[in-house]
Image (cartoon, rainbow, N blue to C red; front, side):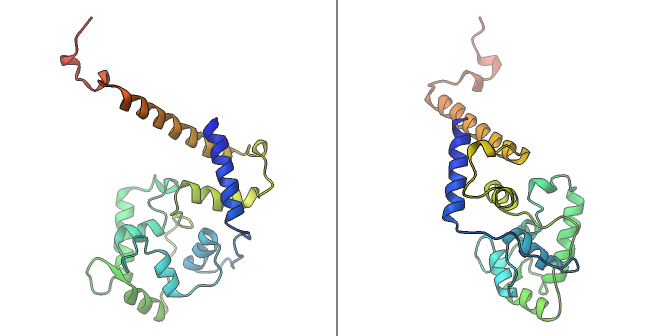
Length: 200
């Protein structure tokens, strides 16, 4: 419970320090996937292809690797854990076929810029808006900003999403405490194979 209070206070501090967030920009139903993604996942309504590329170049090396493309589509997110590997491979082939013109296994900024300049846009694969942040980011942008604000009290954090979020924090804290306890032990009995343990 202590971690729940600390996490809630941290979120409140983060929300206050992060400045005011308006709700996600409204986009037309017929907007392309990139526009919907930027509105829902980043609360950005106006962007250029170079900015889109940079925002999704997670390791900052100037090119998109396959895992970065899949991450942009939310295929690394828990919400898409049930998508079979064969389908992910199909998406990977489809996207690299669209974007990787020189076949080197990466998408350079120039390749992406040329793709967009020629009228291309990233397709909607039906995998959702592309959740690619960590748990804290996703909770803040998809729940906290929608239902809470700087005036939220701890007792107001009672939505199922709040409860699940803080349950995860409690589990992480308990795991850290267990690990710290094991680290203080000279010998961890459970790590010794049964055939070597002294019985009795």
